[in-house]
Length: 109
Image (cartoon, rainbow, N blue to C red; front, side, top):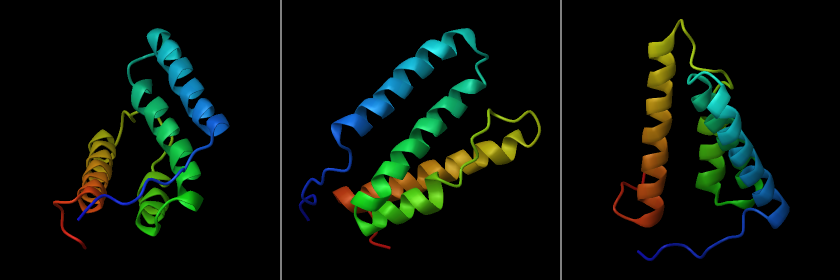
């Protein structure tokens, strides 16, 4: 199955917002504790998910809403770290499934 037609999900201002966040977060991370890295990346992912939702395919919108947006915007917790990492692992697995279905080679359910 060929990949779906490309769909514009970010305008230039929105893309610049995400880019600016990532660049400034990279700079901030130089002076912060390493635990803040996942926090910064998840914050960017949540911003991007917010832009994706209303302009993407139904499956992508559901993924953004149900899997990305609920992730807590916290640095890696000192307590409950295993659960937090397991939740990130599940998010990665869900994203992998979405990508496999979208671009071929994955199960359709």
